[in-house]
Length: 531
Image (cartoon, one colour):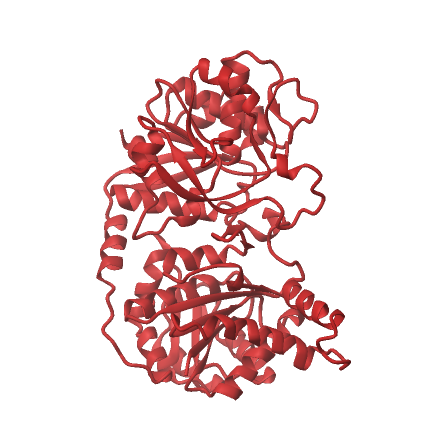
């Protein structure tokens, strides 16, 4: 029988269910089990592709082009779980599928209802992943908070799975909050109420992860266990960490989370292999030097907007045995600054990430011009590469008004323009150039040196591309084209001639970086910062 773990959250959102689920996946893999991860999002959007970064944070892209919740990025960084469109489930997808089946007459005239039709569809999508012969344990994270009306069908599905497959095959792990008030006094009442809400739905949690500023005392754990019918050994502390989130699996391991899970699922207690993770975390915490990277973007006010880039820089720091300090700068503020030196002068390097729309673009152009002229290492990702091209066209080729047609459809010099296949596209969701494709790198370039291979595979998410009409004039002026698509038709990467280290890429390398395997491009970028 396959094993399933449902991870839910209570009291409030943003407690870290995704990190908790990913950490559990890490620990189970360290004991030799094959894990699959699923994220359920209760919103009615079909996917995260059309959602504002200010509402939802980063959109994570899979190899097959799914635009998903950022927690899939956590799964990718923490585990070896294969991720695709099937690993991301939303209410919008479920209802769309059920309505399509109803229109096709597949329900044979029955009245279509939440139970059983919606819950059966949710269940079938979970089992489709969990029944794979390459999977031992499937971890299902249910987004939202227990008590939200949107989550009810998914929690009912979890209840049905526990009832049908048995508690020895399906576990409930519930993450709650133990707040601190009046100085150091910790309160358990919110956790008690959260578990009460879950039990009213019909789910008795097997394990409680209690988010708190410090470790719960033995008496407090016993009190929570007494009021929630959870074994005291299964009431664990999910304490805050100050250095790196990759310490969290080790904290859970110290409290025997993985051992408790395996025992409750009647699985073999294989030895845990966490030495590599421990060494990596210790090395990062004890790093003696720090590099500062200025990230000039338009969504810097929200912590999770550039989550994968933040983590890829941390991984690169681990790979270079230094800490990375990320200085996030609002591109609009740069437009109003007296000089770029004021905001960027203290940084060792500059990075411009992806984004959409006109706002902040002129500030990014100033940042890129400063990086080129001050000879500071520069990494441009997606829009960051396009800004690199725009800046060079304006200030080296002297093409006044050069721009992207996304920012200015009437620009006299459209050095970045809409992809041909995007002409006439009206639906925004899932219609960009998405997913993994090959890039052929040129020899004697920074990107070839970083990867060490001619052909590399990376994921894309964009509608606009380098305009080939300007390729020859830009190259003659000193902008190096360092990578192309397989057919040679699209430019995929650029760099500046006679510059210490500069690379702009049209793809998103941050999506495939891991703490135990830093992405080569970010690793080379941080190495250039050290120099």
